[in-house]
Structure formats: C-alpha cells, structure tokens
Image (tube, rainbow, N blue to C red; front, side):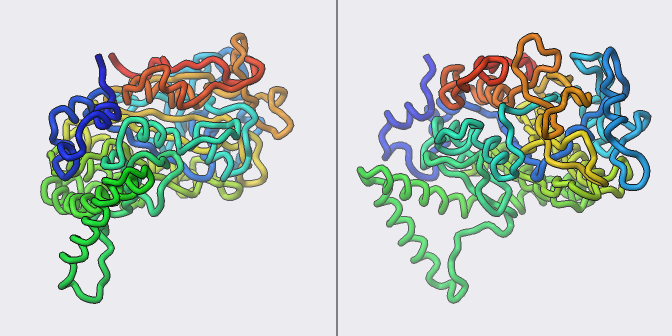
Length: 467
C-alpha cells in the first residue's frame, strides 16, 4: 500500500526527521518515490502571449483549407507575418485535417529534438472556455488551472506541492525574481533564485564578525516557532529554517557545475541569452541533486521568457525579426539544456512543459497580431512520447468568433475539438508526478455547464509518456 509523503511525515516524530539530514532518511526517500520520486518537472512560461499560429503552421491544406486560410489572413511584404511553406520545419500531419504542419524556422533546436530524438509532444489547440484577452487574468487562469473564477489556494503545481510536501521541504525553485503563480502555495517552501552565485542569507554588510551569532539567533527563533502548536507559527518557523539551510547549500552548486562541467557551461555562455542563463541555473541544481549534495532536493523548476506581446513588429521568418529572435532564443537554449541533462544521464527523468497565456489571432493588425485564444503547448523530455496531439485550431474566416479568434469546443463530434489545458496538466500530475486520478480531479474540479462548451469530462490519461 502506498503511503503518501505527507501522511508519512505527519505520522513520524519531528525529532527524528527535522534537520539537514531529512532527505537522507530511508523512509522519507521511500515516501518520496510515491510522488515524483527521482524525476524532475521543468515549467517554461512564454510571457506575453506567444503566437501559436506562427509556431506550428500549416504547410499545406491536407483534406481541408488550413493553409489557404493562413495565407488569406497573414500578409507578405514589409510588416507581413506570413511564413512561406517552404521555409517551415516539418513535424508531421494534423490529426484532424491531414494537413502537413511545420515549426517556425527559428525553432531549429526544438525541431532537432523532434527529428533526432522523438522527444517533443506538440499539443495543439490548448485553451479553456470563455477565454480572457487580459494578460493578467489569462495568466492567472493558466497558473491556477481555474477559468471559473472560483477561489483556489495556490497554483496548479503549488497545490500539488502542498499536498505532497511539508514546510520543512524545499521541493521547488523558480529561476526568477519573484514567486510564479503556478508554484504559489501555503504548504511547503519554494525558493526564488535568479542566479545561484548571488544567492545567500541576507546578512547586513556592516560587520561580518557577528554572522555566526545572527545565524544562531535566526535558527533558534525559527526552531521554536516550528515546534509551536499554532499552525501558522509552525509553518513560518519550519519554512524559515529550511530557507536558512538552503541559503547555505544552494550557492555551492554554481562552483560545482563550473568545475565539473566546463564544456557545457561554455555552451550556455556561447548562446549569450537570458534563456540560456536561466536553463543553466536549473542544470546546476539538477546536477547538484544528482550528485547528492546535502540539502539540495528540488525536483520542480520554473523559468520564463518575456517579450511575446507582439502587437507590432512581429515579423515573419526573418532571423532578425522579433518573434524569430524569441523563438531562436528558446529553441537553442532548450536544445543545449536537453543535451546537458542527457549527458548527465537524467534526461529520461525530466519533463519540460512550455506554455503561454494565450495565442494570437490569425488576422494581422498591421505589422503584428492581437490577443488570441487557443494555442500550442510543448512537452519535451527523454520519456516523452513525441508526436502531434490535438487539432490545429480552425482558422477559416467563417469559423472565427466576434473577436476574430478560434472558439473553444469540447463537442465530441467537432473535428476541431479543443484540447483543454487542464487535461495536459492532469496527465502530467497523474502520470509524471504520481498523483492519483481522484487527487488530481480534486485539485482541478470540472466545470459546470453544457458539455459541448465546457470541460465537464476529464482526460488525465493522454498518451504523452513512454511506458
């Protein structure tokens, strides 16, 4: 019988488990295997609304008119956003129309992972009912996995972390300046570390002679709070103690990686992009976990790349264009990151999820595109079952709604049926992190409404992973 990590820790004595050796305890490691175990989940957010229609593009019509519709709406010439069929990187056929699909030519790194390693799942038409065109609202919906507006506690990953880990744990790190919404929770600790070499306990710079005394005082205060019968005090005490330990354990991963993996460090440096630097920070932490560095136990990571709000100057496939530059930055960094983890021997234990808060509409507004609805998600990893999932959105003029966007549909007989993003999240939580089907459904309750228009039947068994 499985014993969840939370139930095990609740049933164990605090004195036996708390402290720096927590994760070396055999029973704790056994309970950990009932959640994500020795695997990793990396979440990449494309901030601003990535143009999915210029990410996965019809090369031809197949048995429908997708390419004709694309050419009708997207312009050529100065300011045009149309990408010629011959310049696209083929990835396979749309399951619905049979149209051949291709990636934006600047996504060569991702295309290589697809063709050489079959490591990319292209998830088309991902969205939710009654979509929002507001960046903040749409971002919150994706982060919380809740389009209904009902109150939720934390993000979709955060609720999972709170269910499976304790305040004494540090299971997740965001490579950012602030805590991302999808990792937000009130049950366990999440670090935000932009660069490991800058990370540390915030002692003042006036006089270092009293650092030991300050550390001892902080540790004693939080240990006392952690032992409190009051839940809020205990949470603050335990999470504070964990943060102190982490502030001393994580910075050393910078030097460890640069010393042990200089050639890979140089490959990230050669890309000279913020995306490459962020992925390198995650690689340093995964390497630290893999090498058994004490008190380094993160299994969930998040980073983001901004700049996708391409109302103007979006560009077509010109390498110097705005969207081309963004795609190249992400594709090239993901390729090096994948191969780095492959060289470490952990790529089969790693899944990378890529999402954006919405796509862009098919029509141009001049030399850019406005806020859209359904768009693609990507799932990348050594154990990911590569291929094309879901249907390309119906971009024919007659199918667009009053906003000029593709409508969401869950109608069983709709050939352009949408992929609800919560089915993707749920499949990851169930199949990758080890949550039960029922627990996932509790974390993301179904919608209430007409079955054709709302998410009333879940599918957490999307065939996204190899056996």
